[in-house]
Length: 133
Image (cartoon, rainbow, N blue to C red):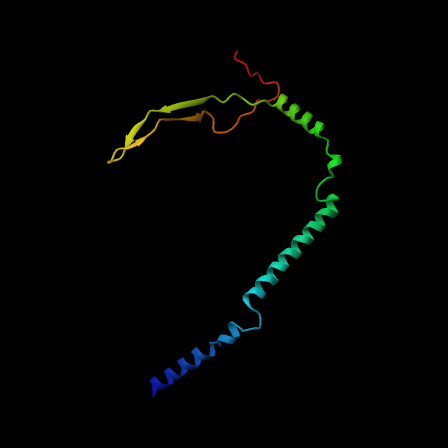
């Protein structure tokens, strides 16, 4: 009797917390393609809205070509290179002689490789001396 009541209570508790498959995963008339295209359409709409906001803030997506003066760009580039020249970065060239590798001697031809001493390009400060003292 006690076991029957306990099992009845357990069954009621378990069925009270359960849901049907239709509640969790409702079936609709949309196919996966329809769902995909609706999501892609939302993304395209968001991107169009972002571009419209940028155009409003900047005036346009890109400045008109007739406003870009190439000589000004070249002059600015020369100015920067003059004030911040690259520091010399010597290279170490290593020559590897032809050799055999492995238990079955596989011939490896000769080759050379280059290692720069510095991992990054270094720039001099304005008016910093580049030549040796």
